[in-house]
Image (cartoon, rainbow, N blue to C red; front, side, top):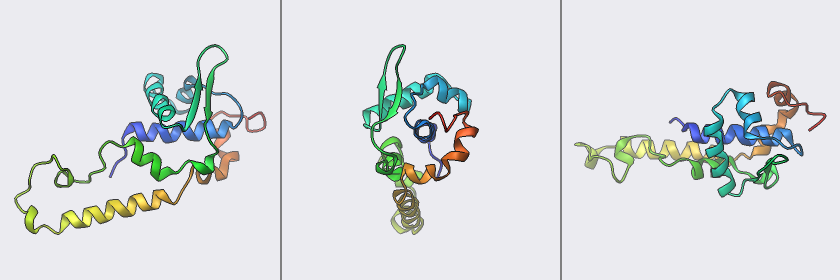
Length: 148
């Protein structure tokens, strides 16, 4: 399984904003720190705002802040909310083509089990778990932890 760029960028944006802590940051800051497209990050920020995970303020003094504490942001829930297609194979989709061996195939059940296990692991973690080494993340992202 591979997460979409949208989900990947959503996770990165949340990590950056949470690492900034009380400081204001912008999509430009995030884009520069990770070397990502600012335009794509704006779309990701809109999704995160719509999910009530961040607040955004426009204008000169605007920026991005977490809408809740990192320990309330579940990674599994984020992946569920941002991934449009959590199917490991075409046969798992309701709209997918019917495979010739579908009525007798055991692989489909195995893939469902594997996906459920993947998501169950992510459901155990929050953004706070990712930030346990915040003091190491800050410098890598160009964030002064003492100022944040």
